[in-house]
Image (cartoon, rainbow, N blue to C red; front, side, top):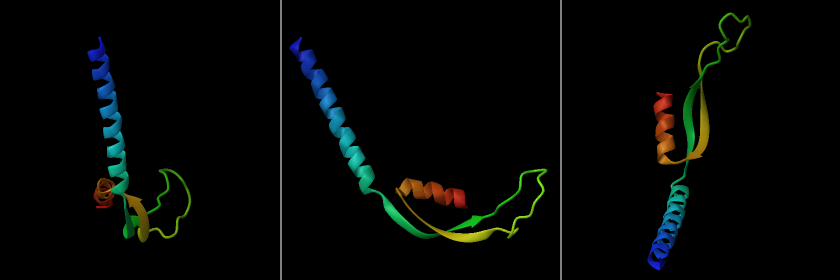
Length: 79
């Protein structure tokens, strides 16, 4: 019976340590991305009356912090 308890305790300890290492590595991987160009355009919903100026897309520069994976998602959505 003691062997089963030791195995469960070891499993829980290893899981907690692995989770803490993963969280530390994820936090250390965050980078700052500055001056990223994003095209922005505002449109009215269908059937709405109004005027939006400017009516054409404009480019704005944004800064953000994120991981490499988040930047890749941002870059894919931007294209």
